[in-house]
Length: 247
Image 1 (cartoon, rainbow, N blue to C red):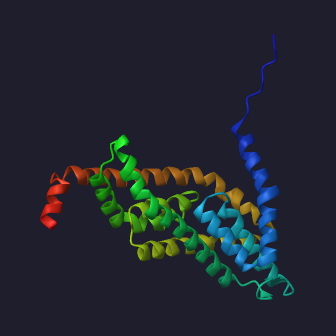
Image 2 (image 1 turned 30 degrees about the vertical axis):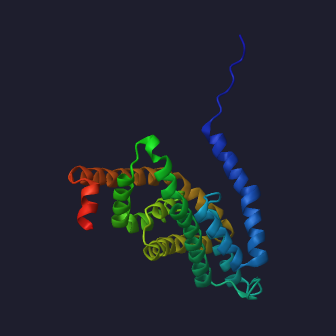
């Protein structure tokens, strides 16, 4: 009887991701921070917010560690300003990077999303009037969706595109992006500052709760979609009729 192959545990995949972070992501961004300082933080957070290729739970606490190094040893300087790393400066730079990254996703959704759906939406039974209603729905709830989305890993990068497709007012989008990114970055930055060289533990602590957060977000989105569907059914007036009346 042939020996049975051991099943590959999902934990092994998770361990490989953590190993990649330890061996590649952390050294790369440590080098980037040492080379270009605040600019490196700006670029890293913009990348994380635009495309979730790296976890903010690592790169933001890493910047907090640089601040704690400067506090303990004044000779540890930020390379661009040749001054000690500042907590508030890093927080401002990280939040600015998050807003810039979210703006990139928003613009892609705004410039390419709607025409793409109008052109190919009929194949999945999406009509232009459905898009009009979706735009109105996101305009009503979109601000809070963006705000809370900024507090959730992965969702941080994904919320930008529907906001752009719905043509949420760009000023409102940027405002809620900044308001949502600020407390998230502040918490991670403070955690990295307090943990110092052990900042990596923050990612290990946050990671188990991500699945719970995802479930809560999915349920919240499902509830909002349910309300939108109900509002559609309670408004029997055809879209064309409303457009004629508005004229």
